[in-house]
Image (cartoon, rainbow, N blue to C red):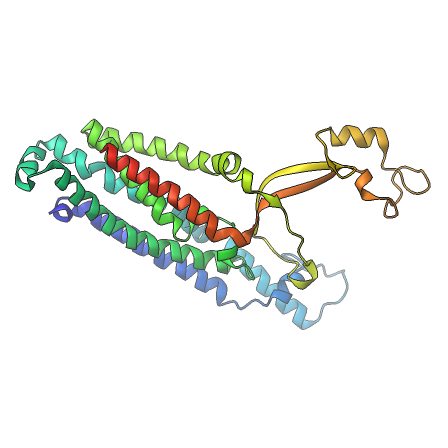
Length: 327
């Protein structure tokens, strides 16, 4: 009955999610089909080759052409459109299905009849919410997996499940974003009793929550768990890389091996750097580097990806349950 009452929303959401999933897989296939070796990224010379420069062999020219094609696909309108839709899809799906779910029946005056037939308003509400969940979860899971595949194709050599590049817009967490938006909008629709006001308020609230989520998590939740950024052997991996492995939380400056909160620029204006001969700007390689202000990044390592995703998904699920309790 719920599906019949909301057939338009059901059909629209299903078409959008299936189409977006297919589009993401198609864009990933287009990138992967180029088969660009990592060595080509390392030797890439840009979008053009200077004729007056040193001679270039055929292999290098071919590599350069492949990377140029790869970059063109990445910067294409269709790629940017798909990525933009992947970012907003969870919130839009949750809001569009959640706004009319209860508010429409209250608005049209059919709710009392539904309550009488079901025998319990809570049972009636639970049935409608479970119907929404059964629709949203598999669709958004497909979208999240397609987004993971696209992220892996966009950043060759990147393991999407051990890096935080665009992690809020892909993978299983998008399911919980959609559920949170859905439950929150259902609660708004239940309290307001009108579809359009609930839709508008939900759009505003979800926009601010999504915009402030990253900063809030970084400052208030993840900050106590940050560790010094682990050193990586850059020679053992590709020197071409565009993805974010670790999530930077904050920077700490050290001087003489101790935490220091002074002004780095003012310190250098006053002290140098001073080289072995006492001259400004001379190579300081023979001097103990702890004598200079050193900025150290404290991060959430990429290897903690699943822990962070589980934590944030749990918080979104808790918010969903809270909104359901309000409804």
